[in-house]
Length: 395
Image (cartoon, rainbow, N blue to C red; front, side, top):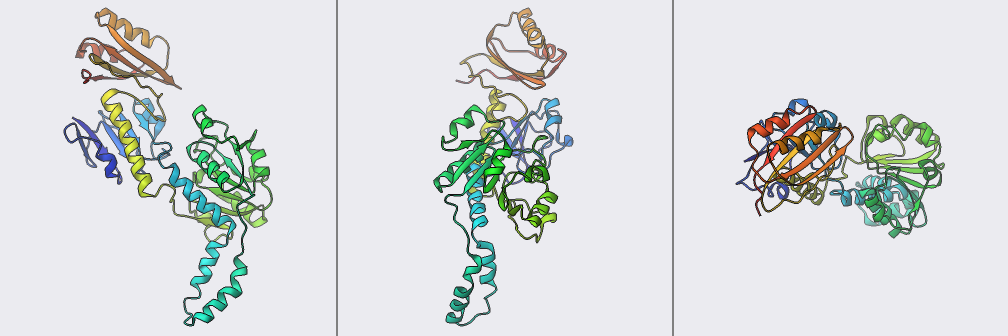
């Protein structure tokens, strides 16, 4: 029986995928095969001898020490795109907040709560509504920095609003490129994007290359009075630079999903309380997606949507046994593995080997059942991190 430790409130629709016959789930399991988590911070102390996988029900993995887990052979999964629609819809709210006097108008109406006469209320409203006059999104230029699952959906939404859409993504994948409309104008660099856009929306992950990328230097490329939306990650934006840009009028508004002390009560700054993925649908989608990935990994060794190991999927044979071997990405390890199998007259039915940065992952289907002696021999190969054995395939 597999053991899965669940942290935070993982949607029941995801947890229901684990059968009671084969899985034990709970928040107090001390030595799990896998951990399911949303926002709780994990550390090296959460690593136990049996732990092989961590599934994050969401896209970001800032709460997981990925590099440390990689060295220990722990595969970290996330759920890219599962909450994309929820974030996209919140970006729409941000776009509307940026061009219409919605927040100030709501605050004004709330200030009239002491009115008791309807005609007087209407008089006040009609006399003051001009204070909250805004602009339409139609015809404005949106610059989308990052064109992945969320950015591409935001770009398509903006096109439907009849906006002009510019896009830039230095790490655009082939799959992502297929999702992007031909009407999105591709920029050569982010400076070109910033200089042409009326509104800029950020959709990039937190990496060493993106941390603090919106700073005084990059803000200088913005059109005077531009609007910046950040529904991606707080760390991408330098708050001191934003405050200075708001004071100077370089940007007219900064709308984000990340409240910060530096920008509290700052004129032009509007923040929502990290609502991007906070919908019932997004939480269910993330939980179901990460549960499917953990199930396939624990039962078949397949990897999909890992942030630290390569995607590896090998169809199970109707008969035979499977080995999953994790190793450092150095020469001759796979050759040593195959030599050990050959020395024991073990026939390889099928296999797949892929690497990612400093690690590699192998799925090897063999005809005969592996014994402890074989597993020990494979584990003793220099550079091998761990070896897992799967029961005979169930057709």
